[in-house]
Amino acid sequence: MYLASETLTRETVADAPDPAAALHRSVAITLAERPDRTNKLLGNQS
Image 1 (cartoon, one colour):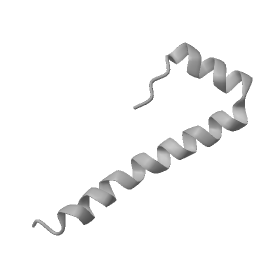
Image 2 (image 1 turned 90 degrees about the horizontal axis):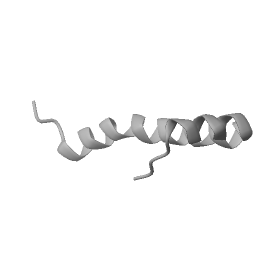
Image 3 (image 1 turned 60 degrees about the vertical axis):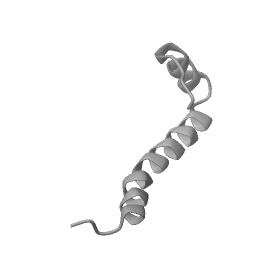
Image 4 (image 1 turned 135 degrees about the vertical axis):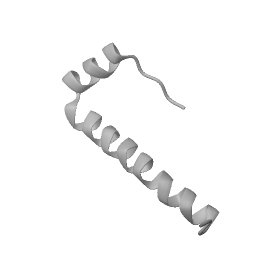
């Protein structure tokens, strides 16, 4: 797990917006895929 303070996150976005946006996209994609992956692993439980 990675953890960055709000201050560090704001500074990074201000100083390097393109890499920060790429990181945000990557995190969003990872989080969006988790429920689907979990559902596939558990199968149809209903």
